[in-house]
Length: 89
Length: 178
Image (cartoon, rainbow over all chains, first blue to last red):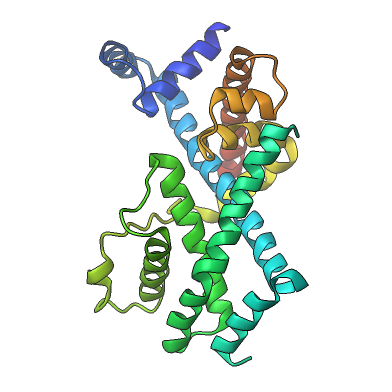
């Protein structure tokens, strides 16, 4: 892996708490002295939040599509009847 | 998509379908009893499935009691949270609800829209690993990499690329606001 990717990996391991204690300590020292590294860590953290939002969005779309199928297909008629009976629809 | 990944996708789909068939009617009965409508039940159940799925993939969590009881517990907690009633909330407090508490949702949405257009493949790879928690082996199979090592390198390339794009877009967005 090229040097920048190794650094990206180290940041990730540090953020996720997957590095060993020695590496963790070393990273903390580097963060004390390098603003550039500190900035990368912050942006990488931001990306983790975005990945979670992206994953959630995909999952929600999948759930909605399953729900639509359950409420529209003949195969799930008894499920639809059960739910409609509850709401007296 | 190869057979292994088709199976994995079917498994998630089958699992969600099963939750609907088994638990959704009970969630509807609970919500109906408290004056809610079918649309409320659909919305809360979708949210409950997301929360349960995330808890399970993140920590391998499986409830001590039946899965159905846990899922209905989340629905109840969400209903109580939405209706701002605290009386019953205490009894199901052990169910943790993690909100999408990103402070600037509008900015997040803009970034996501940009990344969906400009970097969909990378976002798909990253969400498969970090959100779905696929192993590197599963990741290499899903995206057709020859080895786990190639998939690992690609994952970090994507992480670096997205990080730099997000930084650039965010800074220009801040400039725009200024």
